[in-house]
Amino acid sequence: PRVARAAPRAVATETATSAPASSADTALSDSLRPSSADCAKTLVTIATTGTISTACEDGIPLGTFASYVVSKEGEVILRMRADAMHTANINRDARCSLYVQPATQPPGVLSRATLIGELVALDDEQAAKASTQYNETHGENVGVDAVAGSDVYYKFQVDRVFYVGGLGSDKRAEVVSAADFAAAVPDPLARFANGVVDAMNGERYEDVMNFARASLPDEAEPAEARMLWVDQLGFDVRVITSGGEDGANIGQTLPGKVLDVRVPFPYAATTQQQALSSLTMLAQVMWEEEKQYQPQPVPQEEPEESSD
Image (cartoon, rainbow, N blue to C red; front, side, top):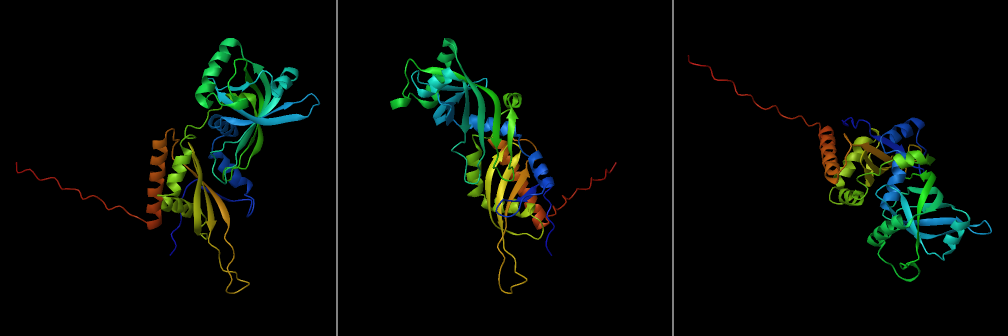
């Protein structure tokens, strides 16, 4: 008999290639992951480049590659040539946008954020600190990106952020306020996520399959599974289910479905070690449920009777 699966709070939703998730599933899935503000702050923190767009004299926006740094205070700072076209545009109209999509995201994860606001020039003291951080992060570069003494440093004053989430079932497209973005905290696992995902999809692939199997409806069976991403609240797995028999056409098999599974951690993981520990614990729990494991009671020794 098939073992009933018990993966409390895990959510499996169909991807756009299959069918849309129900509003209840989407709401539950969203409650098990970081907020849009936190996700946007994470993207901006782990990326160091983006596309800056400013308005030209004729009003047409110009978008080009741009590097940036994030200060200890969480401010986004850009360096520009004094004679650059963007600098001329900013002097005329400070309004602009910065599109960010980290190159480190794996296939299937397409989260991105666009900062919308204006650039404000830093004073000499602030610019000196920004220059040091820039050189530590990006080096002195060459060609048109080489450091020059006349470079101008700007702080991006955020008015709002347009966040688009493509992480698992997290299909959001919404505007985040400047206050929410400023108060948001980047995910502490962001810089380790790729390593954890690669390890799980490699030497611990069996655990990934078990996560998928335990989180699917009873009638579904995973044929393939791949961890997409991990954050402090849990992780996302993309699953391709095995196809079933076509009742209308004997001998033919229906194609499997592509499902996204969100599995929450039992508690927030703020370090790589905590994340790996939670993954190991969840894998053990799901293995015990699948095998209907019952621990053997430890024999208790009877106390010796006193001869007195």
